[in-house]
Image (cartoon, rainbow, N blue to C red):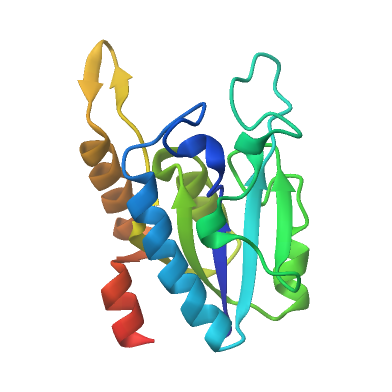
Length: 182
């Protein structure tokens, strides 16, 4: 299988003092950097996904802001593709699918933010497009949510979404397990 690393929305607004801080973003970015380093050493394809909000009323990932920039932990190299998106699904109205096909990619390794939104939407779309997928659990981050006035802690959001993806859409691994099996 020919693999590509897809790093989704590891951007400044998700970190401490950002406009939409996530739980565990720092730790997740360090794990994502480990995976990124491995891909770079092997000269495997790396794609950075950068969300830039065009939605009226958005409060984060605003165009031309520091918050929308990709975080220093996983800063793209000149030869690495950066794809800008405006929706949770990284394939929607972007060149991602064409780029992966041009590079004969059939397996995706995915890390990023937010687990419950853009990671989830991208993984599900990728599976529907025929890719095999590994999600690096500890290289993803999310936040506390609420449903029907019931608070849901980020840890539980993370576990539930990753369990759902692992059920059919992807193989979910920790960084150390992925790096130990590549």
